[in-house]
Length: 567
Image 1 (cartoon, rainbow, N blue to C red):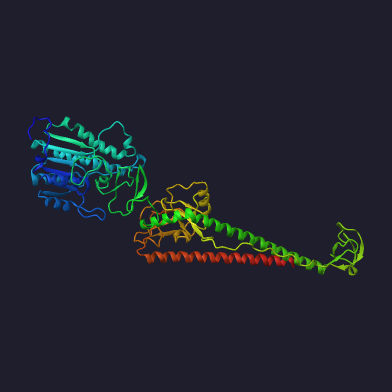
Image 2: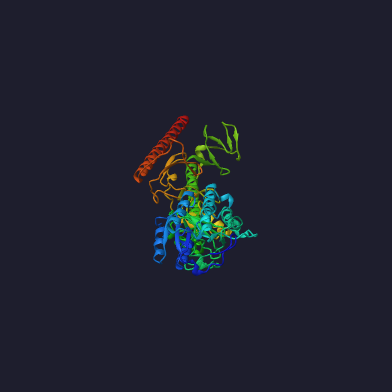
């Protein structure tokens, strides 16, 4: 292209792309691949620069597969493995391009790392990763390509970064990412002030790219769902009103992703993130919860109230029966051991002494009680007649009903509202890492309309098999889960793996991984884990047995001592 030094080259026509050489970073998928396909259709030779050399489970496409696809379109393609964090990789990419094609005409800085979080939620290693790939990597690639473009007298540099705006409300919460992207934009704004070659350096603000065009398009949902860019796996916010595209660690399975415009959600099922349950079970649990809210809770509370009334009447009946037996025995004893005063018919008990009695007076003890003072002979007085047993016992007017889960204890699990140990059904929110309610607090929250709409509870009528539930406080136990999780939801029956570590259980049910030397325990099989658990359980059972024997021995000694004192 002609033009005086320092001046912009004339507008590039589509026909002028034939035979040009373009380096595209991050070209294995999404926007980078769309750019490569669009340029290849115009006859442009492509350098596929990315770090993906082997197919990933969730996202297909490598530098070799993309290069093969481009070559089928009749152009030359050069796959080059490039990690934008490595200056040596960037230099090698430029060197191979010059050796094969002898020139560089177009550079598209597309490779990016995403991290859309606030400053307080951004660790320094994430910040370093973002700046190394986005700002430093793009700067290094541009720095090495500029002299070659200047030598050829032609160049186009496109930087995938947003424009500088005075209203930063749209970028709220994306501080680290924006710093890196705005650095790329500033380079695009100032590159003409420091170069004298005949090329253009452009910063492109994009929302989505189609697969057959490199034209910057306005935001449309169907295009946003196709747009995938950056290094690593990329997911899209499920909120139809949000255009966030978030990066996740590649090949890590189900992950928890947060967007500023949407609650935390699952990368596999694209539903609000769920703990301790599989993706395929979420809908069924949601339906069960809706059934509980609309009908099940009322039936359960009615059943529990009927059972409580039955227990109340049963206790009252037992107390009345015990009182009835007590009164009956008292009447029988008075009939055998008491007389009636001939004058006032007062019941008189002979405590000690001769047969000469005074009503209301204990002659030997000097104790005077209420009585008429009549003197009579004990053996000539009328014997006490026991009252007839004619009172009917009360009857139960309600039937007993079985309350599901009643009396079931969930060890090391406390209600998040009342902070009491959960007895009975346990309500565990599948969207919160550690939020549990007892049946009473669930009903109270429903009455007070204090249940957030985001809560979906899994109703557990049986305690889970949790290792902490079987070992005493302070025990060191093996957990068959080597991953870091929010809260402790992994159980042995669901997840047995080779990575095991040692944890210490505290009184509040929390645990801490022990890293000090000598405390790490490695077990290589599920059988070894189960064997270790059985040994711990046997030791605990033996301890409880000895404790119970000591308690019974103490009771026997106490009773024996009381008998001796009475004798």
